[in-house]
Length: 279
Image (cartoon, rainbow, N blue to C red; front, top):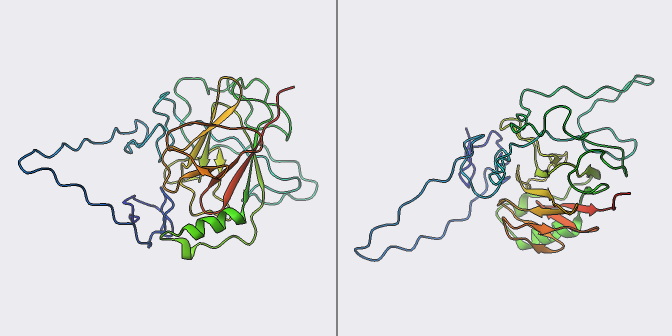
């Protein structure tokens, strides 16, 4: 299996299946470790805590490979359907024949994440995955009704990323067309990232595209429902960081969100938070 410059095993050969780095890009050389003083024993190297779901080494609160929450011990829940612009078909869906009845929900594929072992996501206890735009999710009990994340490509953010440089800056082009996508915020957590069939990762806010932003990690950030009905964002340690309202946030620290806040991830993607109080 190919290995990216950061050392991740990747099923993809163009961009890393874990961190999004270009497979043939040059990785930055790590700073040499300071040599221990003469005669002093070398400090022991402790192995990273393994994820109980996929076995990957722990780097923060959330597993960067499968999204497991180490703090709560919860496995990732299945991704809800994203709302799409009026008249637009979901990405990858075939056009329906004129006069045909709308298709029912698709059956989960073989790579869908396992259900929550705690039983809180068992059939009959979870809220509907998505509702019509502007409506509340009945019975969710988590998060505030009416909160939405609107994903789009932002040229100004892209220009700032390219100006900052990096091993892949010269090869990343701004997309000629990137449709706006709207995601209803529901449940306890909404993972932001890119789908990975080989790793069984289905983020609730899937930025796989097309076009695919190569700077977005498979688990890039997590939106977390707070007890007061608001939302916060947390970067679990993504390769390229997360920017909120122009400033990069500290990995592992929750940042409260408000109506109109802008979350920038990857090379050009911006998520605009739209909040409306419950009726």
